Length: 182
Image: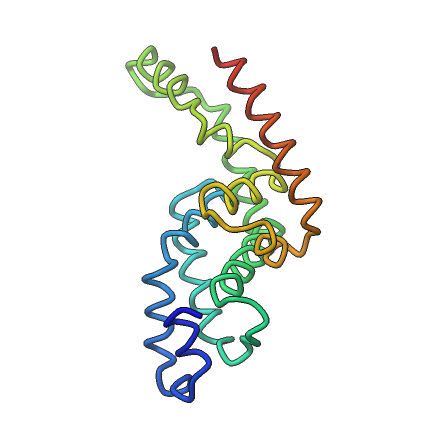
């Protein structure tokens, strides 16, 4: 049990709630932000959602039931919050607006540089971001956050064998994508 979890278990829980949330943000803020970004693919929105997630954690801290690590609990809240956002009317409206903007011609004078720049963005990270959500989620949690499969199962509420299958399929898709790039 790490120091953060120990504080959550101790009697200092209520009096040190702010300190605990600050430590949670310091230790896991970048990881949560990256996880959120993999869902929404927009840095600004990811930052806003990450703030909302930590506010939600602060409000729900008393409900933490110690059945998993506090990091697993935090990532589960983040995952669920992102899924709710992706189902929201606001998100669907935003995507529609972006699709409309894709049809407006570029006002850039250096179109060649813009095309080259777009081609260079096709890296492994972008390939991961293009994966369907169910694959992208497990790839990020396993390879970027280095979480064990059992913990990913608790976060996503998906069977460990299904997680293994999704990881295998994601690797196959990424391999195909990288071969096409060459």
